[in-house]
Length: 344
Image (cartoon, rainbow, N blue to C red):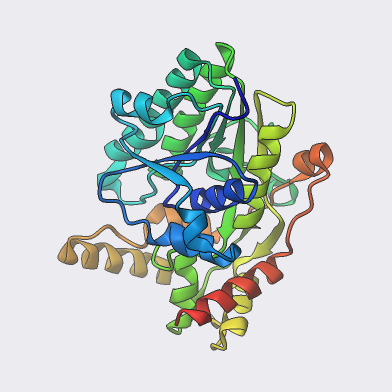
C-alpha cells in the first residue's frame, strides 16, 4: 500500500487521540479521522494549538468522516484505503449501568476495526489499550514486583467493567494477529496532559484547582500524553508486530502527584488521607448524588479499591527495543499546569 495513502485515526476527539492527530500532522501525514455526527472538535483544535504555530491551517488538514464503530458500513467508508489505523477510540465509564455500552463500544468496536483491517489489507493497526488489562502480581512479594507485558491476566473480582471491556477488546486484536493482522498494542498507564479539563485524567487538575483536600494512599505509574503519541507513531514505524508495550514514565505515590499539581497551580497541597471508612462514605454519598442528578458516579468501589493499592510498572521493553526516553512526570505536570493556568 502506498505511503501516499491516508492514515486513519479513531478517538481523535479524546486526549490521546488528539495528540496522535497532532503528531501525525506534524510529520506531514495525510490524515482521516472518525467522529460521531455532532461531535465537539474544540479539544482537537485546542491541542493542535498547543503545538503548532498556525493551528487553524493544521486543523484544516484533517479529513473528518462521520461514522460509528457500531456501524460496519460507515466504518468501512471512513477507513477506506488507509495504510495505517490508529484505534484510540473507547468508552470510559465506571458506572455499573454502562456495562453493556462499555462492551459494545470497546470490545465490539475493536472487533469491527480488526475485521476491516484484515479484509481491506490495511498495512498496520495500532490499538491504544490500557494498563488496566495487564495482569497484576499476587502474593506476599506483590508490592515489590513490577507489572509488565507478559504477566498473565489474573482477575481478582475487583476489576472495573471498563478494565474488563478493554481486556475483551485486546482479545479481539489477538484474534486478528492469529489471522495475520500486522499490529501493535499500547498499554498506557495514567496519562498526564492538557486537553478537555472536564474529562479523563485532565479533570484532576481542575479538581485540585478547586481545593480538593484528599489523597489516597496508593501508587501507580504515570506518563505524559506526548510520550504516548510518540510511542504510538514510533511503534508503527518499527518492524514489530503482534506485541504489546507498557507505556509509562515513572511510578509515583498519588500523594506525590497531587502535591506537584497543587504546587504548580499555586494551591494548598491535599493533606487528608482517604481512610477505608471515609472512602466507603464517599462512594455511597457520590452514588446517591449521581442518582439524584441523573449522572454517572464520580467514585465507585472499583476506583476506590484501585486508588488504595500499590502498583508499580516496568517500561523496560519499550526502552530497550526503541531506546525510548520519557518526559519526567514532574516536568509533565509543570507544563500541564502552565497550560491550565493560561485558560483559567
